[in-house]
Length: 232
Image (tube, rainbow, N blue to C red; front, side):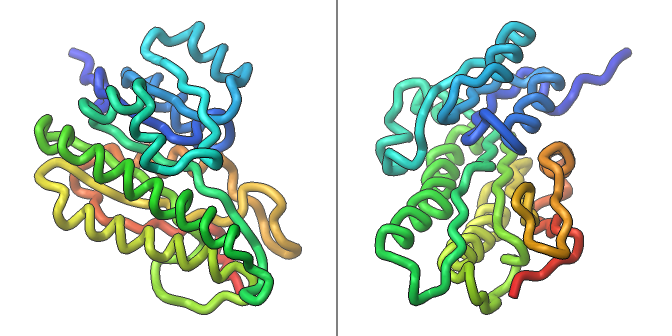
């Protein structure tokens, strides 16, 4: 008798699903029988193709940068899914590389809203349904080596928000409940990698995220996936 995937007929929301890691993770969830609401800026050809292959895929076109987290969770399709969700994945999160003295108030606000407030808001809105269903899988995406407090010369604002995300992951892992897990991938560069570094593929990151979500035993994991590179 064939054993069905732990994701079979589970309801998932992927924020930032139209390209890169989010798209690859959406594919894996669909292949394993999940119902997925994919959200992202562009109704891409890849999403259209997946919709032709999987009846379980719906799409919400949304520019996360243009809305506050409070507005996002009130979008009808998202609000509906969050009320019954079992899987939450948030690969979305803008990156800004600037020295502290060059970082503007707009930069700080954008990073704080998108890199910590958005995943935090989605997580808080998702937990009641997961606790009610007795099942939950949350996967978030931090920054390179943001598993502990460090200093950064050119990414302090971004890394500060992503370090806070690691606190969120550990907190959700501790208090989410039985059979509810929260983990994070801390990736290196997937594009535009600095000199003498190597990019990490979106497919690899998606597979690691999928693995972390596959079992109840892995909870509160902050997985560095950066080929050993540490930012200055």
